[in-house]
Image (cartoon, rainbow, N blue to C red; front, side):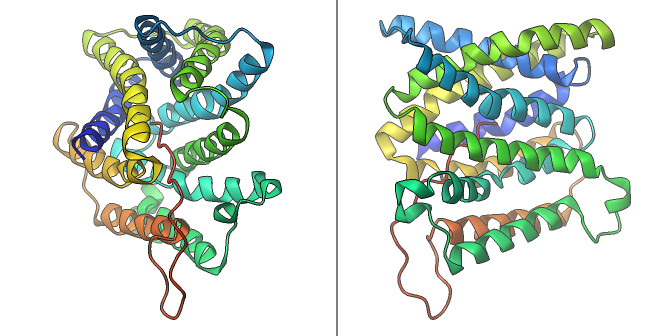
Length: 308
């Protein structure tokens, strides 16, 4: 459990690091920097373990696709979203990742006839509760909704959708390599694909590398991406994916507390209410709780990686 708390602490703080970094860097530059630094950290780890990356084209093709949906798009969307909304709200909305993982699994893995990938009545109810929780957390129907950024909120939710697809894609195409090798491959391809875009946007919009921003990017890349990936995969190996998925519920708590205390972001009760609704939705989708009158749930499926 201490490993999960450490992982939640690292990923919870990552939202603060993104908020600080994007104040002087373009979203693509923030994303590219953390991907590149994370790749360096994982390459160093594999070198220490004397593990070589595969050289076949299939591995790198799957790594490229995974990187687009697991790193390039969500990391950029989170940074872009945090230019418009608070880090606390971003974390709560991004906690919807397991909901999208369930939908992607039901669609993308349907040909594998995996029972746990199918959505029944309880799972659909969980999705609806989770979606309602996202709306509540974003402030839909509230007095402050007019002053919030709908696009920023959608970007944070969109990042969760990307993570959901990426996890499902990896489950179908990357099971023949270890998780650490797969993560190193996708971060490497992410750096190769995104760095040219980041350089271009930086040349156009400029960059302000104040010391605190440099520190935030270094921590975000080396710790929040590289070290966190290693910690996550070790947790999956030792604790199993179901137990490890509990980190999904802890990350927003850390992120909200850090945002309010360190960044002075306003605290909204709707964050707690919406976050609680998202958690209930996830529990229903993962079949960890059941509705009255229903039979006992099937064994819980993995909640997936937040991948902040």
